[in-house]
Image (cartoon, rainbow, N blue to C red):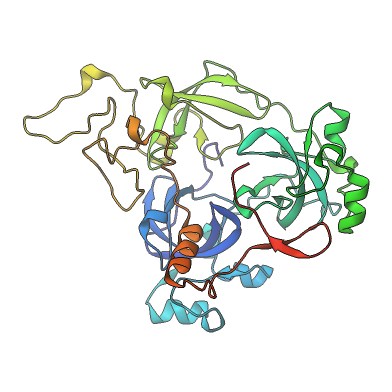
Length: 385
């Protein structure tokens, strides 16, 4: 999804589809195309505010045609205001006079061939926590779609989950940490985590490990410092900027936006769909933000402008609900907002909080549950690691 696309973006505003919630990768939702820009799409959760919208590529493996969830036996989270037992896609489209995105727009994206049969849902492995890449944790295959698997960290909520292909350097066989002198992070709540035993854990949970022989090493990513590329601005994801690689490690690269302060630099996965070769924007018809130069900025008398150097007033800290800003309060790059996560609001978390506030008895709230080590259900802890 990084390189030059083989097909044009055929999606149109208003088309309906199914896809993954980026904040909750195990959740599939009813989506609509809110905006098309080059080879990219801004997708909207039907029934929710536009502040939850997110950007993705037209060739993303995270989006699917209408009916995909029913066909593959995945639960579809329906638009707010509809009853789950009453929602029928075709009735929804007809009643609202909507169009579903044609299946031909969803290309076959399996680049690694079929998933080896040895990988099965429920099997255990060791996986890097992408939000805290120095940690390798006990994990489970929560789902498998085509050539990708969904990694879930045992006894943590699904906000830490992620999809990856079977050759990803982020997933390793059981025992990898011990063989490589790394510390394995035991599941939260595990008794005596300093002496975690895979043998005892597999026996207690009555699960199996993914066979070590099926893991294949992916070749090094090849990125080097000083290489130029085009990268999505994480703080303002509608924009793609001219960028330079300034550092690398085994799985990631650190990106610097040319002409900007280094405080906006950030690490991203080497296989991220948000980085592209130079010329990608030109070929796909997407605007490219050129390097900032103070002398190039011309301000007309009386013009309201953002005070942050380099910012042209595009985007807003509160998300796509606002297309622009003219003060530090709304600027994604201002010092007052720099520590805030500008890219995505948590739709489900905020909905749950609203439910709790509207129902003091908490009778309508649903608790995420998991099995504890005695086989009993308990609440999943959603605090940061």
